[in-house]
Image (cartoon, rainbow, N blue to C red; front, top):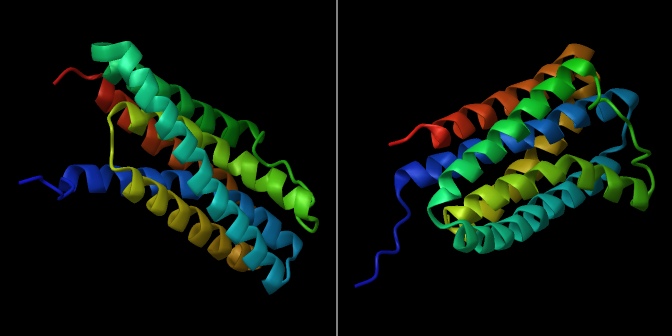
Length: 188
């Protein structure tokens, strides 16, 4: 009989990564929310972000499966290095203020560009998870739900929060990815 249950460790890894990636969207959405956004615009922005948080890791997982076949036994080291680089970049960007760019989210194209910019890191993590052949459905659903939910919460809470929260949200997400990358690099 086939084993269909997903190991609890894989569930936890996917959920924590989804939370880490959603924190980037959350932190940037707080900034947009502080500038003022209508509820319908907040809903539209969150739906587009959720869509890209599904699309980007899906493309990444497909790429990661291919890379896993090509790299073979070096897959864990490559995946760990990729997460370390991505997490380090997120931490660096948050403290340098590079993540605080604002795109006009009032227009559809501005919303798409914004959603793409906060979802690009989901592609890299998708590549990593594809190398480990994680459960595709769980991965993309978790990333989409967390990305969309955390962005709408960030937009709606933006006018209640101070400017400092946005900077630290991305740093926390980067730290989580960095820790997972280091754990992948440590031989078992």
